[in-house]
Length: 102
Image 1 (cartoon, one colour):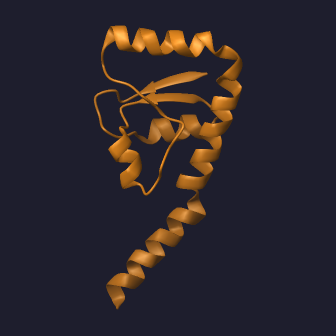
Image 2 (tube, one colour):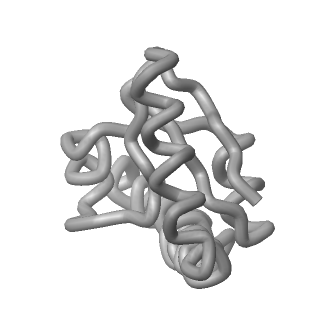
């Protein structure tokens, strides 16, 4: 139910997107500035770093709140639908294309 993706990056990859679409809790290197660069104020992603103690603490925190895992997974799913929807992405491509043609 919990996926760790790209701790050494300041973003997240396609595996994180797939995991969120599946309703998983995702721990990734996506920092606050990455989320803001996407035009968002928040995300359900758990920011992590490649540090064994930090990862252990974060897993421990998730397990301490294991009754919330399904809610966290649902938030991941909704985030993925809102941010990475094929319709939204297609409209962004069309807008970018149209801006070039002007």
